[in-house]
Image (cartoon, rainbow, N blue to C red; front, side, top):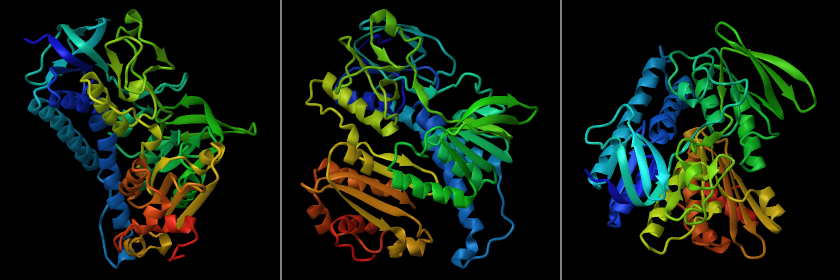
Length: 471
């Protein structure tokens, strides 16, 4: 049994398994330690199963509105057991796929709970569920140790999840039934995605957000557009408010919600989802013993993912925000390329797109209009509504907005923000443009195919410079 490696990665999530595969491609001897879920949270209890649920909700929404498309649909309804079964099946498929990829690339899988006992040394204790062919408990050494342990739901004192009445995303992803009423704490990506799903499934949904804006990291104008769409669907939203107390009943909860003006109200709901963020899994890894620096629940790293202890690296959610799977994957590549002595490029976090798969979808990259102005830029802002786009109208998805922000002096694209149908698939065009340091002139001269929703992107650029055609 091999016990000595060039790279040993603790955690098999998006950062861990991608980093391991890249390390193997570079000729390094590599192993991944996993204690519970092959592939980590993303394919098992995060990104992928959540998108499967949302796809079911989307299809149900279209069936409900079949007459808008000249169609007739009768005798349809929600089979929540079937919806969850499909989602869990997709999660299992993705998890198994990660195991296949690691095996294909000759990456050793060590199953258990890892503890760093000294620089270059890891002790692994046995845990249940080891897949066939995995190595087990023992002492392992490595020239480089990469911490990729991810994050878990943040818990607020007095509102601790109990898996029955108060849920985290784990319980929300696999409900036994659809609650008639649902209170969601937090309006970030997790909160609004579950709000969209459960509202489509028939729940009476209320969102409580501490900050004055839902989707707090997004551009204000885009967030407001999304809010109006949510409220039009019947989702109730309280911003500038917090849940200060929760009392459990036999089969419901009653939350005391306080607003910034000092008023309070009691809201009773069948279930409560706590979606108030996540915290890094930094505990029980031996970080204190070896002197790895942490800050507010995350491992401190530099641009190449190095910690303050030579030979120990960290990537993904455990290394701090933005806590996104694609950020973790990219850090995994940066990290192992730096280990291998390649010319790795530090990540520019402004170039990391954010995607929220609610209905309507929200996607963004770069600076918001407010942040650009605060940074001292004189800006040109372009907007284009989906109602002016033929493809969006034909799809029955005419309610959306594309927004672009440019440096007025140089034409540099500073940020792009989208809300509407399938915008999570569109945003990458702006991500590539920003990475290539594209100017407004190059975007204006680019040919966008017709009819596509992507034409809204082009028109928003044209609008910033007074040249929009279709508004």
